[in-house]
Length: 173
Image (cartoon, rainbow, N blue to C red; front, side, top):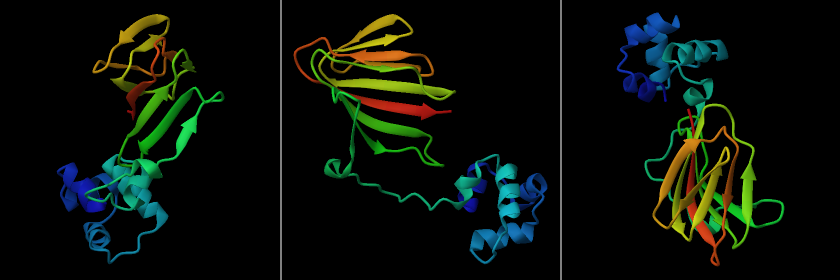
């Protein structure tokens, strides 16, 4: 993780050493898997890279991540009218969640808003979705998409006769 993060930022060992207060030798040892850094050292390196601590210690992401729909847990609202499956949950290196959501005919799902600095991207796969964001209504047909500041209260509604299915990505800035 250290090597990847350092290279993504085009930093040499010397530059990172200067920014973090950790010696070039220690940084090199950590990258080679030879060092055993203390928690304080990891914090210093994370600060020098301007990343979360967890990004340095998280297991590396596989180059291919296959998700079988049957293996993804189904989440429902209290009444079961709105269902969502999170295929790719956010991690330290992936700052977004990817959901497939479904709303039964004639039903709604309301959200008071998500955590600060989040955006939501919705792409309708089937049916007609009404998105109401801070009181403004938007009708999305199959193939339509919308992006909005999801810290705002919002509601998804299905006024049609068939189930609405949509891809829902929540991005954490």
